[in-house]
Length: 335
Image (tube, rainbow, N blue to C red; front, side, top):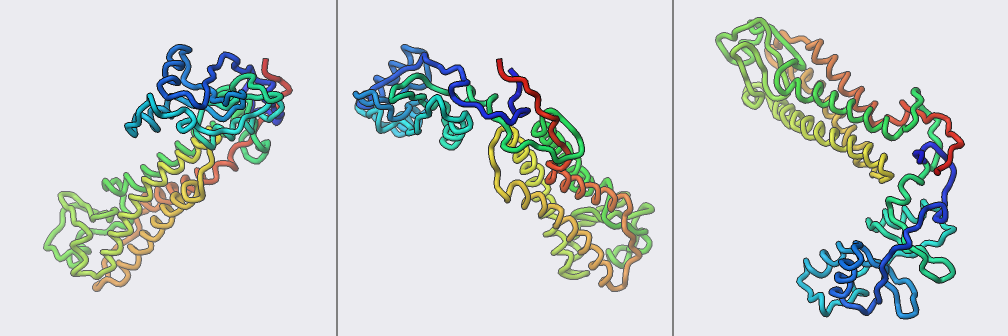
């Protein structure tokens, strides 16, 4: 069976192999009766009907656990109709996408299939999965791939992990700094008599050198409140770096599974990481410019390069849709 993400053809319930080996239970039966029947048939779901055989919904084993067992209700008294989930049945002529959407929205696994008022089977979300086409053929992008969503997921994941390492981990552990300076020119700035080594790097939360570690919080009393602001923004860089990492991976994976995520997850959280990283650079520059006396400080070229790469990678992960386009659809059909 081909992956239907490659095709714009719409499929209907009648195109599926409908499961006609299903269990039915009356709406007035007890939960204990339903559990016994599930065990007898070896199924996790039963279609709930009235005496007239009108389909009312479905009761699943997780309904029994959540709505009866977890609440301490008596399964010998509790009725099926009070525990089942209500889902509108589909017909053989309904699109597969409609059945999939109904199950997805309720987070359930089964929808009844009814034809001419008669129950003919059940459809599962797994039955529908391979028959869900893309709503629009993706012809925008630089690289042609057979599965854009999978490619976008791995692209976004790799970009975000590298961005997190370059933009957060490296300056956090002192591999590079935002600014650097000669220890001899920073003695009065730190209020110290001597500093070993040839260079001092200003990372996220402290200045580092050989046998030298000076937290920025110690600069607040001597060099102003701006260093407190730098510490706060540095904390936000770390927090939103972590949030950007998880939100981009989550949103790209959700798209693979046809699950929509909101503006906050897809865009806002990652972009705030970029914003706070830029603000951090600006604040460092302002802090050194207003320091008295002005320290002999220069921009760390490696640190600036890595930060720019980190921000570009996050933006690339956000706008991953523009990097991949779908190969032309084939005329192959499921068989």
